Length: 195
Image 1: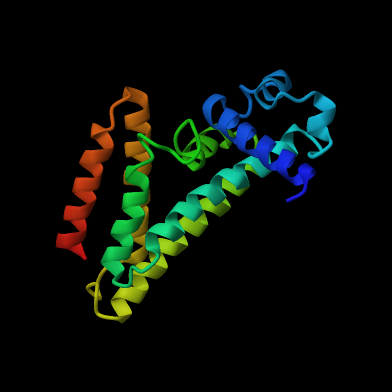
Image 2: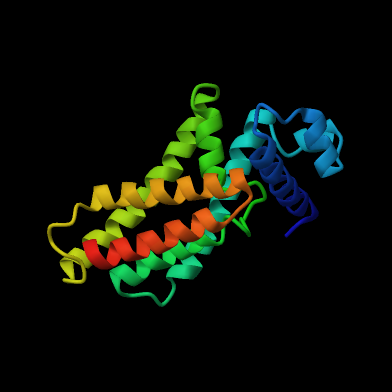
């Protein structure tokens, strides 16, 4: 990796954490310069604008989550085991998020809803990717006879994601991972009885 690529990667990591903790609107160019230790020109040497940096920082954060998910799914073959692995990835987010500040998808979706349409679209794309992954796991499980044939894959994907994201939010809000632990226990029981 060249020195320029290393600098860009470092900026992305630091900006992703800043945006995830303070929000895009709540992070000024001065904040970005402070966390990166670079002047405006050094940042704009790698990014066209603050918007460009925000989009790339979001993609960086989502790639970190996807990396954790791929690692968790490695060597998992049974559909329910794969779903539990995804749930397990999120169980660590309350205490040890891949990007400081909680779930970047949740934070970005909430912040960008009405204020930043391009960032909202990227958050939607990331959510669609996650919904599709869970849906495919369930549909494959149904085809293999690992999951009941009457299970609605779309419904289960929505339930899993909404429940996990709610647990991340509550754990972060209260500074107490008990909310995540309760949700993990509930989802594991739900899978045993409903799938």
